[in-house]
Image 1: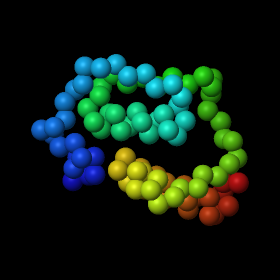
Image 2: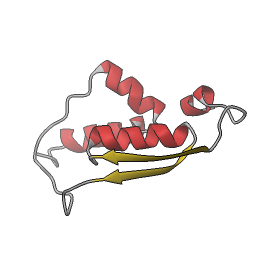
Image 3: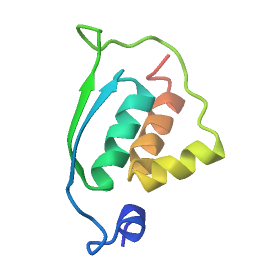
Amino acid sequence: MTPSEQRYPKGRRSSHPVRVAIVGGGIGGMALALVLQDAGFRDVDVYESASRLKELGVGINVLPHATRELTELGLLDVQRGLDSFASEGLVT
């Protein structure tokens, strides 16, 4: 059972009749969209003003509490893959 299934078991999950607008498609906005989807919200829109996504050439420091949240969202393996990608010198 995944962490989100433990937090929102099928009996507690329901489709919330609420429309949600998230302004900003950065890390916080996208994480919020995933959490709301896990909680049963089905009408969630993310708005981003950037016309395209691009690399910024910056690093992200992922602290223990953020790692716990990545685990809850089912994204820890993705983060670990990026770690190894960076350690091989492929990301600057």
